[in-house]
Length: 384
Image 1 (cartoon, rainbow, N blue to C red):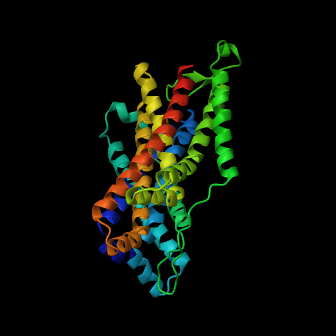
Image 2: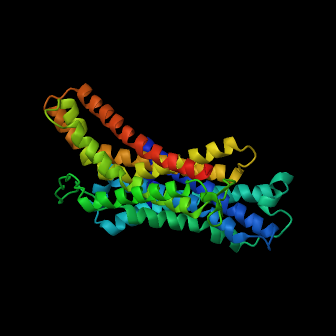
Image 3: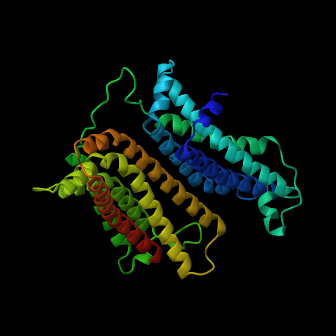
């Protein structure tokens, strides 16, 4: 009953967040049910690799659930303030948000299960018979056990992501500190990037194809040597970890010297929010780089693409983009008071819009550099 009362106060963003989580959970549930159908039709087949294919979408849904749940306290402070005034502590608020996320996952999983059962009722054609396990009895516990993973993982991820809400009655708001990127925080990702790039260049040298045994890649992506895979992994991790320091450095460069009000607002804002934006943006760029590189390989080698990896790639990009949107909403909500103070001091609305545009352009330039390097190294590993 409490969740129904909370749903009555949903706005467009709340409903979109809930429906997006439910849709992503439905797709992951469909992957799990496909693995179950394949296992029913071919008990002696490779069931473990099919379940392993479901782990990246499951991780993507948990990432989306965590990002959207973290944005709830700053997006709806009046709701959190009301719950706190009613006596709900941090653990109760976490449980409520986690339960709300788990309910969205239950709705998506239930919809996928209903469609799975309907298609098994002699409706699906021969092309889907193997995926549905038609002609074999379906144990009741099997789909329920598999589908319970999605709400469980989504709820736990949401509960772990919710932070202590600020701007509540009796609590003093903390001033956002400018993130400090020390030498170790910069040296580690920079070293990973340099070492990974050197390993990949070593794997691309003439005659490297005769060294060792190549590793067969999934999804029809051919094969690559261990040096190429390890090198690309190190370089991709290093560039992802460099996203935050690069965003902060770009913000400081914008405000360098005697900046205009536009440059000052854009630079200080980008520097202050670099840590918040770095994680979701790095995941989105890494996912896009991998998916675009795989799509380029499939286009150059017709007939190698498979439906399952393509669908998983679309889901991963969608969840990463949803997480970025949720973080942007969180950042915008956290800057609501700053924007109000600036408008009260006489700042023109066009100045604030221009600062947002300049900040977006600067962040996009950083992401083009990191994403381009990741995609370039991935393309080199696949074409070797």
